[in-house]
Image (cartoon, rainbow, N blue to C red; front, side, top):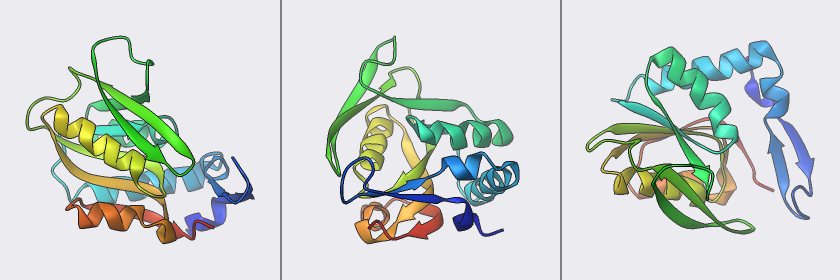
Length: 175
């Protein structure tokens, strides 16, 4: 199955000059969604994983299903002030602004090997922030898995250059 056929491209969203790659058309198709989850599970099996984490919010769609199938705890990286208990926070740059993500301090134990899943990687700022959250929590990043890699924005390449393992289901240009 060619998963790329299930991704809708929306020009000038969320602002002019951005070509948004929309996963809603993939996840609303039960066969395409199942195939994407199966591919992430298969790619994930080559890594030692204690826990699975995802970046708010579209990463949750994929990671919760993968967590269930691999029988691993699921950790949420959320936007600032969305988690009720004590958190670690990391600020980072986006393509079009800045943001903060957080994780509960009791989510990741020392030396946990954490797989990070998200729907898409562009410049890599959010993914790097997620890696920092794992590391300041005492864990290690097992790998990243992204449904979509916007290859010309170099986020995936930047993560590899920093020593992280990266898997992508699909590659698209970012513009």
